[in-house]
Image (cartoon, rainbow, N blue to C red; front, top):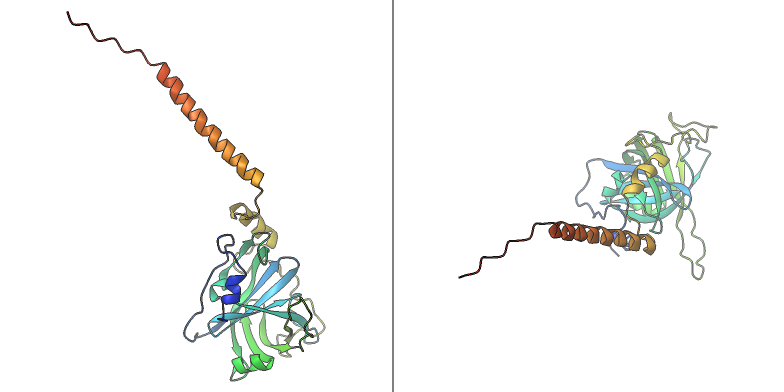
Length: 245
C-alpha cells in the first residue's frame, strides 16, 4: 500500500475540507513538525513529523509534558500529506475524525541519530524539536503490540517522552496544558468551530431541510411568474386594424 492510500481511503473529500495532498518528492532542507489539537470523540493532540515526503503521525492522548518523568501515550495512525500541516478548521460530524482541528504548535525537527528511518522501524526515535511551544530533546519509544483480537485492529502504541535538557521542567507535568490557542490564528477551539461550521456543508443534513429549501425556491419562482402574468394583463389592449373598404 502506498504511503497515503489509507489516508485517502478514510476520507470523502467532497465533504471534508481536509487537503487531499500527495507525497512530496525530494529531500527537505529542514524537516517540519506540527501538532494539531483535535477535539473529536475525545480531545487529543496529533503529533506529526515530516519524513520521506509525508507526515508520520501519532495521536497523543494528553497534552505533551515537559516533565521527563511524565510519559504520554502516542497511538500511531496513518501517514498524512505535508499539506495537512497548515490545516485548521472543522471536520464535519459523521466523517472520519469529525471535530474541530487547531494548529497548536509548528516548527522544524532533526534526528539525534544518523538514520531516523531505521530508528523509527526499530521503535526508538530520538529527536530535537524547534517549535513555538515544544523545544529541545524528545523521544518516541514503541511499546509491545497487544495480542490480535477478532474484530479489532492491532494498535501500535508509543510513548512520547521529554528528555532531560535545559527546556525540561521536572516536577511540572502540566506546564503546556494552559496553552489553548492556535499558533496560526490565535483562536481557541470554540472560536474556530463558531467561525467555520457556518461555512461547512454537512453530509448528514436532514432531508426535511433540503425539501423545505426546494419548496421555498419553487414558491419564489411561482410568485415571480405570477407577477409577470399580472403585469401583462394590465397592459392597454391593442387597437384593431382598420377594415378595408
